[in-house]
Length: 201
Image 1 (cartoon, rainbow, N blue to C red):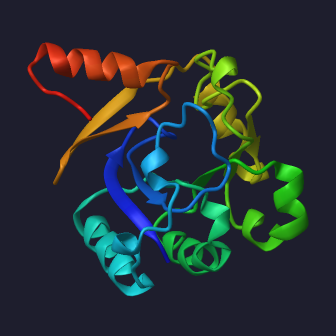
Image 2 (cartoon, one colour):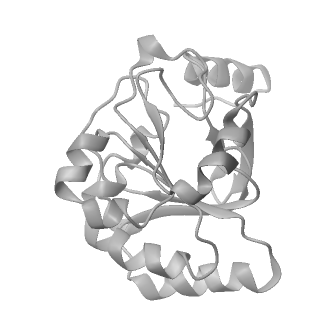
């Protein structure tokens, strides 16, 4: 499997303090994508499930896990990885939120077993011209689909009245900015960094 990053605690892509997993590989090619560096199946991110599971277990030893958010890249280009990882994640928390550029109807035809194991699906390609700062969604064509009926009221209360926020993590090669970004954020970020004397290629 190809996993680019695992971050904790992610507080801006689902309720509570979550483990965020970013998978590699995507062919949607959405203009303005916030993670174009994850489009390729880069061999430097190739990993077996064992170290991923060990890392998650270590986080869980001394931290509360309120859920998992899986993004990318396109997670459903690695269905076998999802089939292996999601049951393991559910040992710690059953709240699994997954982002996908595929539509729900496409995924239901191809991967009904995976959909039955997740709590929330946010589906549809990102359309930059339709980025209207919708909560949890990059663009307003995307839908928040609560697939677990037992979590319906919980998620509806969470979604109601909430707003997008950005969360920054220090990483080995700088910072990772997590959350739903507004249009043009790449340029805004570059200008802000340039003001601090940091030039981004």
